[in-house]
Length: 394
Image (tube, rainbow, N blue to C red; front, side, top):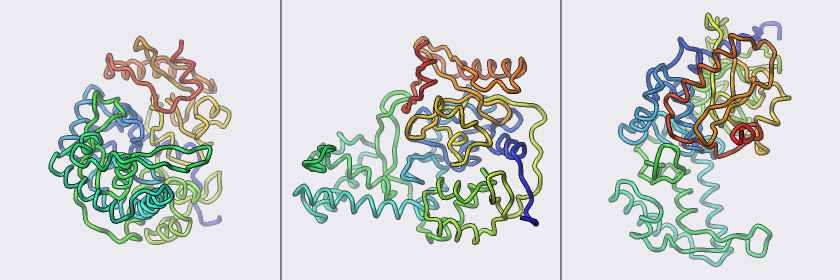
C-alpha cells in the first residue's frame, strides 16, 4: 500500500458530484451528455431514464421532449440489454462495445436455455425456431417498429405456447414471442422502441437494432471498463465484477489492458483509470438531488458504505437489492422521496447528521424542480421500497 495514493470518502463524493452531473455547475445540457457521463442509465423501469436525466439537466423542462427525441427519433440513445442481463440506455456509439463485451456471452446462454425448455416441453426444434426468428425479423424490418402482438399477425407461429418446468412448483406457460424476442434483444438484433402511452409506460414496441461493427471481445471489455472507471472510479475489484457481471479473470485482464492505477480506499485496494489518481476538488457549494429508483449513481457500486449508511438500506432498498427514490445531500444518501396520488412530491430525511436549514431548503428546491417538469404525470417505481410506499400512501 506504500506507493498507492489514498482516496477518502470526501474525494469520492466530490468525484461523484461532478462526474455524475449532480452538483449545479456540473449539470448537463442534453440527455446524451447525461448518458455519456454515466456510461449507462438503468432502463428496466422506463420512467427511471427520464427521471435520471431530469435530475441532471440544467434545464429540466426539456427532459421529456429531449429524451424522447434522443431515444425514438434521433436514435442517439438506445435502450437494450447490457451488463448483468439488465436493460440499460446507452449512447448509440456504445452499442458495439456493450454487445461484444457482455451481450454475446449472455446471449449464448439465453438461446441455449430457450431451446432446452422447448425441447423438454416437446416443442419444435432449433431449425423451426430459426425459421420463425428470420420471419419475425423480416416483419419487423418491414414495419419499422411493432409490438409482439403486431408481429404475431405477420408470423402466427409467435403465438405458439409451451409448458415450462412441467410438474414443478414454478410450472408456467411461455409464449414463443415473449421468449424469442427476449433472446433477440440480448443478441443485439432488436431493441426497445417507442412506448405505448406516455414516457412512464412499461409497454413498448420493438425495432431493429442499429447496425454496429463486430468488435473483439477482450478489447471491448477494456473499452467498457475504462469508460466506467473514468465515470465511477475509484472502485474495488468487487464493484467492477458486480457492475459488469463478468468473471473476475475478465475484470483483471481488462484492468491490465487499460493500465488502471491502484489506489487505497477504506474498503481496501481500488482502481482508477490511467492518469486519474490525482486529487479532485469538489464543487464550491454543497448540493442536493432527488434521484429515482434504480438510478445509476445509487446503483453504481456493490460496496456502498461511503455514500449510504447501512442502517438506511432496509427502508430504501427492496428485498432484491433494487434501490428506491433517494434524497442526497452533498454526496450521501440521507433519505427518500415519493409522489402521492395528487402529484405532490414528498420526502423524508432518515439521517439527520449534518442536515440543517441549508440542506432542507436545497432539498425543497429540488422537489419543486422535479414537480415543475413532471407536471400532471404520475410516476410509481416498478420496484417499490418500504419508505417509498409509506410516503406515497400519505
